[in-house]
Length: 128
Image 1 (tube, rainbow, N blue to C red):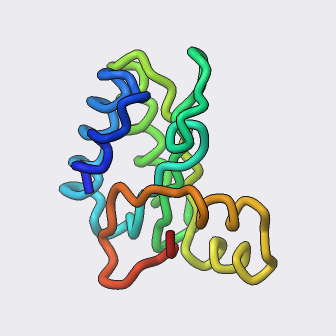
Image 2: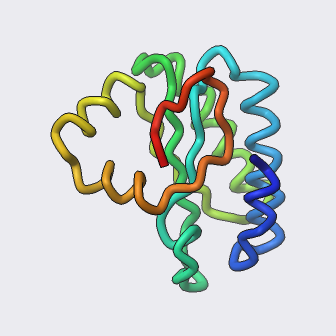
Image 3: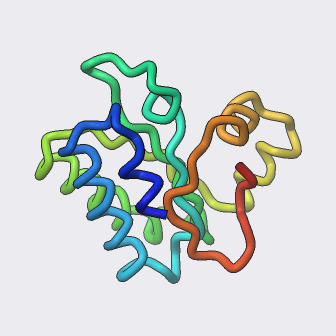
């Protein structure tokens, strides 16, 4: 999946490095929490401005803040370390399924333009 990240030439080298490090750490340390990571927004479409953030959808197995908080700290650390703005939306599979059932515009947008960077679940969580 990281190969697809390297094809996004409109991401800066620092952004690609931060994302690569994030994906490696999630796979190694948080595989019991994270189900899927999807890049979406201007980072995928290629219509970024110099001050654009990097939008990430991180689907987890739980909505419990104690489960998700370490992910937020990791992302904040990597954002600071690489001087980039990773903007995560961390959501449980259950809540994300409710968005799908309610025909949320954001769910549709992620489904249309999202790029799966990491899949730790046996079956696709979000079909993109």
